[in-house]
Amino acid sequence: MRYQLYREHKYVSSALNDLERLIAKTDFRNPQEIILVEQTFQSLTDMLNGHAQYENDRLHTLLKNRHSKIHEHAEEDHAHQDEQLLKIQGIINSISNAPTDEEKVSIGYTLYLTYRKFVADNLIHLHEEETMLLPELQRLYTDEELKQVEAPTYKKMTPEEMIGMMKVLFPHMNPSDRLAFLSDIKEIQPEKFNAAWHGIAPTLSQDEQTSLSKQLQILS
Image 1 (tube, helix red, strand yellow):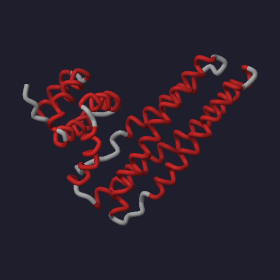
Image 2 (spheres, rainbow, N blue to C red):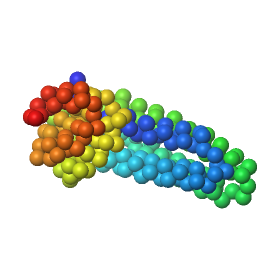
Image 3 (spheres, rainbow, N blue to C red):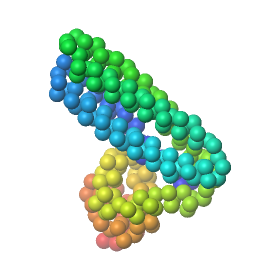
């Protein structure tokens, strides 16, 4: 199996859907529930913006360097995402400013419909990246070259930051994904690996700890 990028999309998809479910059940007459939506949306916005910037800077640059233009639609999607996020933020702001509970509930429903469409668009975007851009990257680069995409990130990260990243991502991933992340860290930053492993291992089942220890050749 070729080296895979975009594994973090599993977390992105989960975060998008978590907020959709939150908005769906929010009582927009309740200020505290509106605040929770606002905070969750802001966190999601920060994550999506950072993720889009990473893809533009790292992955799309690889394609440009080999004279491929397949990424251009994805970058258009990223620009459209910015517009959609601003629109959603405006709707959230208008809920708090609405003078009556009836208007708050009505605008809340508009928020739900608008955000649900945003999720649908974003899931199509993720699908296109994994089924179109990834094969193109795999065609243009070797597995070893693709593995180096994360090298600058892991070089900057402390073991504690690596642990934090894995704690966010791993609950949304299967054992093969978790092995891939840990293998990359072990190969790219071996001096940080032991601390990262000891930090993340307690969050895994005993069976998976044993399996990963064998696959990663971790000495007890």
